[in-house]
Structure formats: C-alpha cells, structure tokens
Image (cartoon, rainbow, N blue to C red; front, side):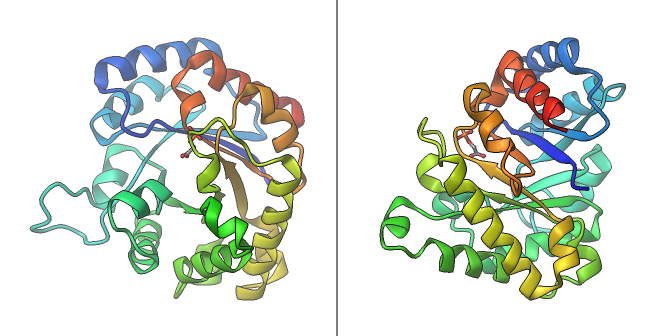
Length: 255
Ligand code: PGA
C-alpha cells in the first residue's frame, strides 16, 4: 500500500544552467513514471523555478532542501515555507545531517521546520541517522528514536501521514559505503515501531521510510527490495540523469 519514493537531493550542486541540462536528460528518460512510484528532485533554491518550469508536464515533482520556520521577516538569507509552496514545491527535506553538522540545526529546530512545512502542505522529509562512532557504541537505535520523537513532537496523527522519514546513516553519506540491506531493514523496521508507539500501528504502516547513503543503481535493487525500505534519498547518483533514471526503473520493476 506504500508507494516507493525516489528523491534526489542535489545538495549545493547545479545552478539554473546545470539544472536545465540535468532536467533535460531526466525528462528525456523519465517524463512518465509508473503510477506506483513517486519521483522527486530537490535542487538548490535558485534552481527550483527552473525545475518547476521544466518538469510541469512530467510525473516528476519538485522539493526544496530546507526551509526556515518563521513565516517572513528579518531573517536574511532564509526561505519560508510559503515561498516554497508558492514556487511549486510539494516536499522539503528537513534536518539533513549536513544541516545538523555544519549549520547548527537541532532536534528542536527540525521540529519547528516540520510543523511549518506541514502548515504549507509541503511533505517534510525528516532526516535521521547516526554517526559511525554512535553505531560502534551501539547507540544508533536510541539516537534515531530520540531524533524522530523530537521531530514529531506536537504533530497530529493526521498530519503525520504526510511526513516522510529518511534514515541516513552519516557514515554512508557521500562515502561510497552503504548500509547493508539487512542493516537498513533492521533500522527501518525499528523506526516503524517508534512511529507506532507515538501514533498507531496503522499510521506507522502508511508512513514512507526512505534509505539514504550512497544509494546507486548497483545497490538500489537489494535496498529497495527490503520490506520496510520505501524508497531512497539519493545524493551523488541523482546528479547523473542515467543513474537516477536507472534507480527509478528499478523502483518501477519492484512495484
Ligand atoms: P549520497 O547522499 O547519496 O551522496 O550518499 C545522500 C544524502 O545525503 O541525502
């Protein structure tokens, strides 16, 4: 009953010109996507307009990589949820580990961003995941539970149905190292029990849990075949139209 979601996180890559080239490639290969699969690209803010324009007649949706939790005002350099909605975004990544690591985002600010995203009908993709050190100390389950519990604080069960969780072990992001399908499945299953404890089993069964961390065509099939892996948040491989399209095709074959 859950649809697979294949989401590209372009990070700080592709200004409007490069975005147009990448989108053109993607559009040529995947303008139409199987009805059981959702596809999303999250370009940097300055290329969102270009992406919306290019993709308007395709099945590919557009999201952002971050948002501010205030509505408007004196917050130089920030972008609000209403601006993203107005620009044509349907999703927004929240609390990516790079935001937490380099830009001081906390569980509390992730919660505020989640709330404001939902208010603007932007589906928040909440990123959680442990460092290598935390995994080695066997703290990863507790940490991920705390991150999810904090992010969902005050979010109603109805609104939670629009939330997407992305499990991204920090040690697997951009490193070429991937969690094994078993490691991913065990954590995703655990995340579902955490959501079930907060809301209900029914809600937990409906929420999409993506895996992120060096997903590529070579490992996408085995990761996406896991029963609790409902898609991927893809960095590096989403910058190449061939690789990203191949992952979409794998998802289509599995649906
Ligand atoms: P990666 O990035 O696929 O390049 O590891 C994933 C992410 O950070 O979302």
